[in-house]
Image 1 (cartoon, rainbow, N blue to C red):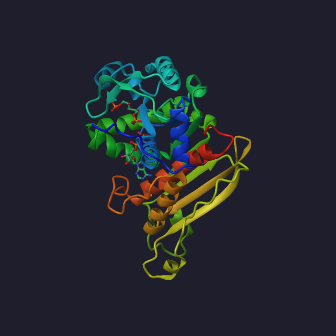
Image 2: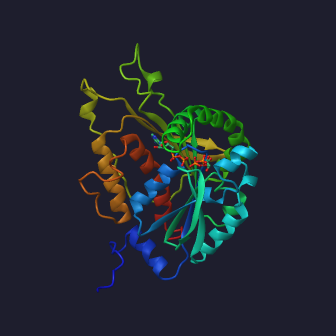
Image 3: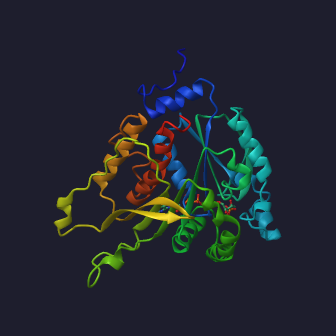
Length: 339
Ligand SMILES: Nc1ncnc2c1ncn2[C@@H]1O[C@H](COP(=O)(O)OP(=O)(O)O)[C@@H](O)[C@H]1O
Ligand SMILES: O=C(COP(=O)(O)O)[C@H](O)[C@H](O)COP(=O)(O)O
């Protein structure tokens, strides 16, 4: 039987550089994604994984480090948002092993049943994404190469968490409601400050395009669109170009859909940042082009024309995934950084 060959990437591409440095014995790169429950951490982590591919990226959820399962929590009243309700020191020790390239048994939590699963051996990959409520806590800082904080508006989180927890996690409506209510203060107390340790902060609000309409709104977009802000610290380095083509001729057609893209240099925590704002319906053709541009930048073949798992997602989610992945990919590709 032939030995399976590792996939080949275009010489000089980002994917090639990531694979090559890892195969030469360099340590994996660790990326932390933190934020509240239902804010979109898993969705954006999966976006990076989809773009780079499973041969370069693997994922870990810190939910396996909760001290109690759902039934025990119902008795104790403990909240998973409380750092003391989690084995964070054990998580940091496990990540330190992975960072040294050593395989580790990672504890797991099954949200469908609300119970722990047997640990699974995690073999390091060139990039490891770590997603969780406390991923940007001080115990993880020195281990992380890049940090993302997802900060969704309370109205957005409420809608996403309620739908997911009742449809996929078996929560009754009343319990889902009371959990969301009791967690609002806990988020401010235990999770929100992690954004100040992040390289990129992603904020998601309900669409604000309705406020720009003249007398009366044709399509206020509120149910299907989001206003996404991506806050990044600007750098001086050239990363090549990335095109987002918009067909201006569609703007004068009767069936034109609301859409806005803006870049606003701003101040955040006392330093200069660039804030990218996106709102409205993403033109599908532009989305496909952007995705293929990013894949070309990485050194991966264009996405197949047939419907893939990612392409089956609603356009707003696909676009948000790319907006979150892009600053990280750009960071990797800058000469002063790890690759
Ligand atoms: N940009 C988005 N647009 C629409 N729905 C989204 C978006 N991001 C996340 N969601 C939805 O919100 C729910 C919660 O997202 P998830 O990634 O599971 O959050 P977390 O991992 O932070 O708990 C999911 O059902 C997901 O489909
Ligand atoms: O706060 C979270 C984090 O998960 P996520 O960020 O994916 O929402 C969950 O409530 C706990 O992990 C417990 O899970 P469950 O509520 O399923 O018992």
